[in-house]
Image (cartoon, rainbow, N blue to C red; front, side):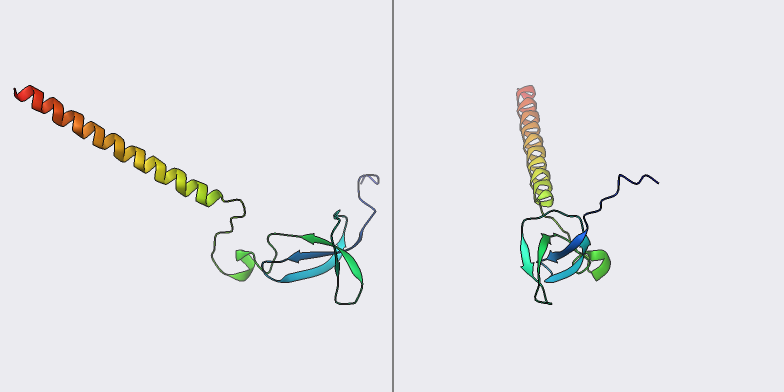
Length: 106
């Protein structure tokens, strides 16, 4: 195993999931400028995470959509716009067919 590729600057760091109100203290090399006063009275670097074991559906048993960047909303909007275009084209084709039928009757 190569000896020069593994980090050596491990230090205590608090990882916090603010949505679930869950935090834990562990050793990490994660860099951050935020700090937090922990339960033992000491101040530690703070890393904020979007999902932890307290909020992830696999661990909680809840089925919910975790969407931090609005991807689901963008997909729904795109899908709705495509349906509207499809209906508009169908309406236009129906009107054209009716007009053509009217002209051929004369």
